[in-house]
Amino acid sequence: MTNKIRYFIANWKMYGDLSSLNSIQRVIKFSKLNKSKKFKIVYCPPYTLLNQFITKVKKSSIDVGAQNIHQNFDFGANTGFINSKMVKNLGAKYVILGHSENRELGEDNKHINKKILSAIKSKLTVIFCIGETLSQRKKNKTKIILKNQINFGLKGVNKRNKIIFAYEPVWSIGTGVIPNNIELEKNLKFIKSIVSKKFKEYKILYGGSVNPDNIKKLRKIDLLDGYLIGGASQSSKKLIDIIKKTFN
Ligand code: PGA
Image (cartoon, rainbow, N blue to C red; front, side):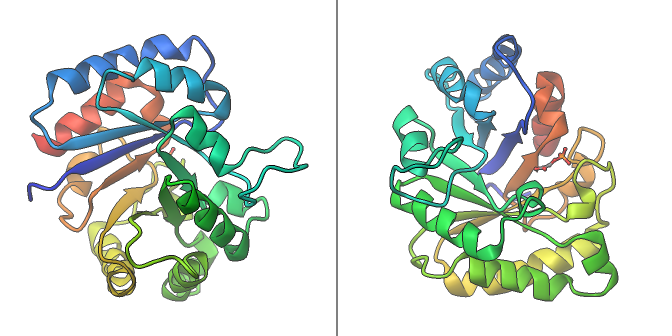
């Protein structure tokens, strides 16, 4: 395994309340005890917990990100939403954009592109989710879908910006099913072939049902810089297990 930094991004989705803050103590301790290992943990809790998480992880190497933002950079009459400046102002460093659960609600590549540009303007690091649905996969449309998501989503983004790509086959999210390594490597190589022409520095993560049982299989893929972890990341034990098994 190469010596590069590995990302473990915890996407808590619409889970968690104030009592969850105690549960991450274990992960904070783990990160402090394992400073020599090259990894970065980023918690993406719901908006309601962003501030508390940021305060809680302050003296550790853990960072915090939001799960989405509104597409408008400027403040405005957008009831129920928050913009990139608000997220940045709290002290968050990352934002997940283009997640399939939001694409399903109507976010298209154009919306996502605006969000990405806004996040970059606020100096947030973008975790850009891309991935095909099961029916697109069945119709052999994976490549064209990925290509469009990348090209339209990143329109106008400067070559020097650092984007973290999260390849998440939609059919893997929350299902317990992951692609086999051959299929996964094929799609990751395809993603790399596009993004390496667009960016100087980028990372590629895998997301979709990552857990302590399948991580040993996933870690064999050297192309990966880490994982976007949903369900399993809410358990500190599982998250620590995933990190440990990535290295040992
Ligand atoms: P999952 O979610 O690990 O629960 O499949 C991943 C994600 O949606 O980012």
